[in-house]
Image (cartoon, rainbow, N blue to C red; front, side, top):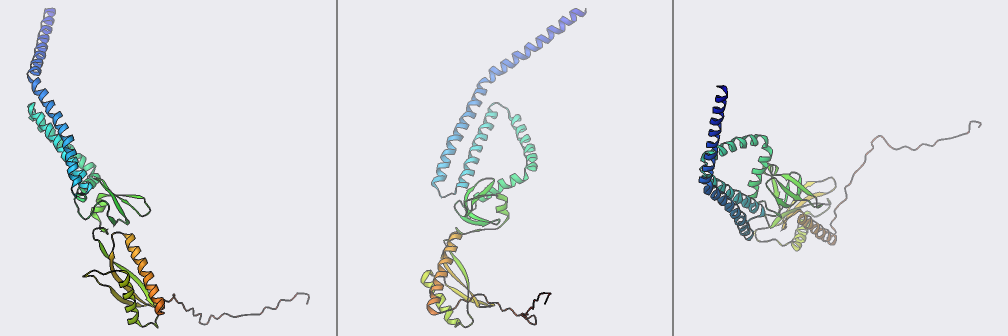
Length: 303
């Protein structure tokens, strides 16, 4: 009896296994066209994403959009096309429940990754924000986070600045978004400020006139612009002033060049008019501690 039961159970299990295999084969044969169609659709979408993203990249290159916007937009466009092809392929295979599960799992995974990579995601979203800020573009001269230089790259993680000594400084995007930055290149002209001082014996109105004329001769002031001259203090050895004037300024080097030219022009004008720019003067008062001279009488002990 036991042998017959074993044989019967074995035949039953084999029958069920073969039935399952036949069902799987039948299902595969029936769904094979849909499977092939889904694979073909996905491959076509991948190919379309590849070449259409190149077309979008060319369009952005011909426009006035900055490189950071172009890079981000092309990547987002390419990923969106591929995801659309994936969803259509799953729909062809009637795997809507799988698609729902994938989206749910992606949400959970995304939440976990978001907590784990808060700093990185902050920089990424900040990079997207910076990419669409028209006041910060590649090639601009900026000052931010105690660094200054030309912006050479803007990506999803950082802004790269080339300083005057030709070193590259990588600043995380979150630092750029969260702190103020000064952009010299967004305005073609700027105001340059120069400080100086003249002797107390000087004719102050005459000094002001000579100084303003020297600057006017060197730097053209456009309509709406003017030279501003202000005496600021009675210094220890001079009466000090500042003069402010407009010129073409798009980076820090332009500021230094303008100050250099202004100093040369003012010094030349002062030399012609015998106007004194005094050295710092210090008076040392020793009071009661006068220097004394003493004569020492040195004799031999045998004397």
